[in-house]
Amino acid sequence: MIRYDVADAVATVTLDRPDAMNSLTVALKTALLDALREAAASDAVRAVLITGEGRAFCAGQDLREHAENLEAGRGLADTVRAHYNPLIELVTGMDKPVVAAVNGVAAGAGASLAYACDLRVASERAKFAMAFTAIGLAPDSGASWTLQRLVGGGRAAELLLLGEPVDAARALELGLVSRVVPEGELLKAGHELAARLAAGPTKAFAATKRALAFAATHSLAESLELEADLQDALAATADHRDATRAFLAKQRPTFTGR
Ligand code: T3D
Image (cartoon, rainbow, N blue to C red; front, side, top):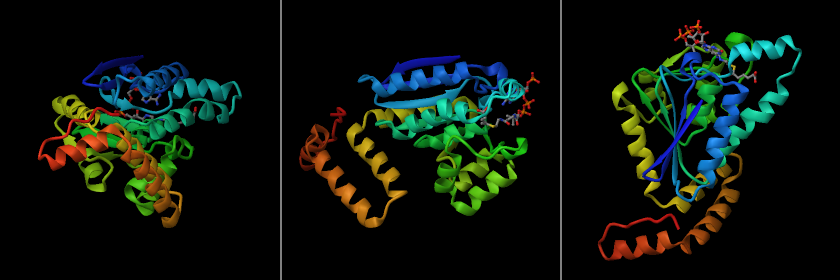
C-alpha cells in the first residue's frame, strides 16, 4: 500500500492503493506513518516527497471502513487521534522539508495531508476537494489550521464550508500550490524540487520550519527571540561556516546537512 524509495537523499513515499483512490484505511495510515517515521529518522534522507499512484493523490478517509465504524458504534475521536493527528504532526514537525507531488484528486484528509506539506507541486490533473461538509463532517487533519495560513481566513472558510473542488489552475492562483506541470512531468518536477532541498542546508531548513510554525501562534517579540536562538545555533553548523567561506571565496557552497 506504500512504496518507499530513496534516491538523491530524497525519500519518495507513494500511496499505492489506486483501486480505492488511495483512500485511507487504518492499514494504509499505519504504513504511511511507518514510512514517514523511517524517512524522518534516516541520516540518508534530507527531504521527503509524498505522492499517489494512479489518478488520485488521496481521496481521504476510506468511506467503506468509515461506514463499518459508524455501524459498529465506534466514535471518531480514537481514529482521528490515533492516526490522522500523528501523521500531520509528523509531517509539519519533521526536521526535513516535505514536498507533496499532487498527481490527481486530493480530497478530505488527503487534501489536508497535502496542505500539511511544506511545498506542493501539482499536475494539471490535480484537484483539491474539501469533502468534509459534503458528508456532514468538519475539517480534520489540520485543515482548519493549515488552509487559512495558505489562502487566508476568508478563502479557507469558503473552501471548507462550500466544499467546491478547486482545479490545478485555480489552486495555483490561490497559492495552494507553487507550481503546476503537465501530468507526465510531475514526478520529475517533484523529485527535482525535493532533491534541490535535499542538497541544501538541512539544519537551516529545520530551523525555518520551526520558526514559521512558532510565529503562527506567537507574538512578534516571542518570534524575534526564537529567531535569535535559532540563528545562534545555526552559526555553529558546518553548513553555515562553509557557505560563508564559499561566499567570500566566490565559490558555490556545498551543503552537507551538518
Ligand atoms: O473515519 C474517520 O477517521 C473520519 C475522518 C475523516 C477524514 C476524511 O477524509 S472525510 C472525507 C472522506 N473523503 C471523501 O468524502 C471523498 C469521497 N470521494 C469523492 O468525493 C470522489 O470520489 C472524489 C472527488 C475523490 C473523486 O471523484 P471521481 O468522480 O473522480 O471518482 P468516483 O467515481 O467518485 O470514485 C472512484 C472510485 O473510488 C469509486 O469506487 P467504484 O465505484 O469505482 O468502486 C469510489 O467509491 C471510490 N472512492 C473515492 N473516494 C473514496 C472511495 N472509496 C472509499 N473511500 C473514499 N474516500
